[in-house]
Length: 336
Image (tube, rainbow, N blue to C red):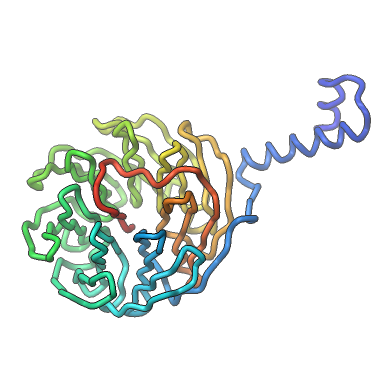
């Protein structure tokens, strides 16, 4: 069929040219249908059982919360483990402020603060099954707790400042440049809850079934991953769906590049999908098993934590930009 198309379209061409055109058309077809996997620049590094959260430190060091242990692993830009830090049972979400302090949400309902050398400074109760963690523009810490239905707001020293209701099952969390808080609610009739600085709910909008990852783009649009519907939803500030991007393999973690590309980790397909601003697939990269969280370092490398095989994947040179954050401030990440 493709050969006939080439002959009809191009007329009289050589056999070699026809085969070359068939090859090019086949590659385009495979990319657009999601079958083409680029694994040339992807390397996996073993870090321990069930890694989840990722955070970016200075000098492009990567911090990994290893859920199957009590550890946070610090890796250099080449994926080599350079420090093993003790935290608390089942660390998951992780964030780092501009001073290098490390904040880790753990499975026993605590948040732990470590200094840049890994020394445990403080441990505070924050609810039942904490999930997402983010550092806001004022460097306060925000943690969602799924079963407590709350967000806990803490100072950088981990003093509890406020606890507020955030929906039935608050999960992923992100803050915009004005300090507004956006939270996915991981339920069958999923929602995104928007709260102001004081913790008052100002808007709730539907986000299909069990939304997970969330990010905010340069124009203030909100991007939400939804593994059960195999899609990424793009909302405007008012919660109107602007676009639904279909991605097979249960999209989970999401990161936006300053150059405009979007990267989505597909937890059941062991891949990262790179998309344009318009949602067109630009590339697909093979990862370790069950990639969940994803980040972009300052050199444009993309990293995933792979809970299924205890690895971290580094995709070198996936973009020319850094990870986009909706405000200028400390380094921060949200965990899903």
